Length: 209
Image (cartoon, rainbow, N blue to C red; front, side, top):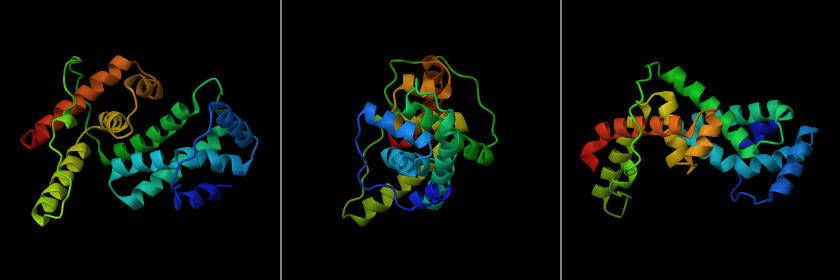
């Protein structure tokens, strides 16, 4: 049955399905009973978001698919322990986040710094970075690639938890409350972590503003 995840890793759905909470609950119960088709349907609901998050973390399609496979394999093996009173998406992202955090920790052994006070009035940092999408102008396209490389490198210098919080907030669009639930911590702690990450990125990329 583990082959299910390996097969699906090569064909993330082109158009994610939309189902009601009731239908999703039915799929979960069937998957917990060993229904392969139900599990595959659950994967298709979230596979693109999971693959996108993994790609943002590692920057390599090949490594992203490895994380994607590992995450859904863990989901499959642990699904029978999922308690239906929680939101499946929150539980799923927690599994994915832990897989990505483990990967980042293996690459980055730097210690976390103390959290600075939250700054609710601070504008989102990436809103201040100019839009540098590639155009037909080769010079601007090259400049855009350089900026993308610098941003990726700066993200790589964050500690694992800071990076994951930043990825979940800015690339997955999750609310701080939801990220807090995934991390089993408070919204304020997540806000502090995001602030730390934003400050570090501003220091690294301040000349782009």
